[in-house]
Amino acid sequence: MNVPTIEMDPEAAAEKADEYHRAFEKSGNEEDADLAKGFDALTEGKRIISLLRVFDVCPADNKGRPRLAIARADRRQVNWSGSEFHADRWSRGAKPKHAMIPIRWRISGSSSGYADLPVIPPDIRGGRNLAKHFVLWEVEQWAEFSSGVQPDRDPYLLRRVNSGLDLFVVVAEWNVTELERAYVAERGRVA
Image 1: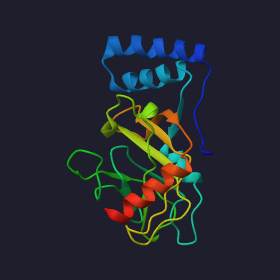
Image 2 (image 1 turned 180 degrees about the vertical axis):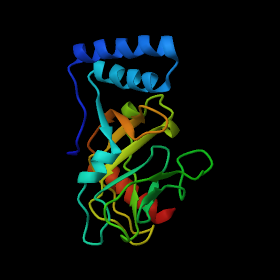
Image 3 (image 1 turned 30 degrees about the vertical axis):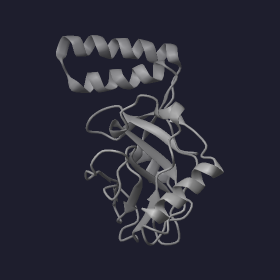
């Protein structure tokens, strides 16, 4: 996937992280804590994305829907409703809960559509709490109905840097295999 990312030399990021950690210890300012977390991730060689930037440059399909989707990682399907992603139709495991992500989308009144989240392989899922992670992926084609969804490729697993803003650490990325795509397509037909 080709989206704008924030990257930094790990040594320079470590210096900035230390600066913000010290500032947070003195002031308790949450902005300092958020920035320290972001610089910590950059110190580890991780990339950070801003959803505002990503969706600002995201191409649209012929019905005005974004060619990218994002949803909490513990969901199975997302619905684009013109300015928000709703992922409350399916849940992996636990009781379904409403999960909505508002997006500032430059095309108003765009059509709705459905997309299935890609399978997250076991080595990437690990012991992670998927309810605290998100998946961002390219949507090859939005489906008009929830049962006609074709799975997509090239996802990122994301974790929020902060509680209120749109900055996310890219935790992992992977390629979805043909078998995983076929499984997701079949799962949608029998659900």
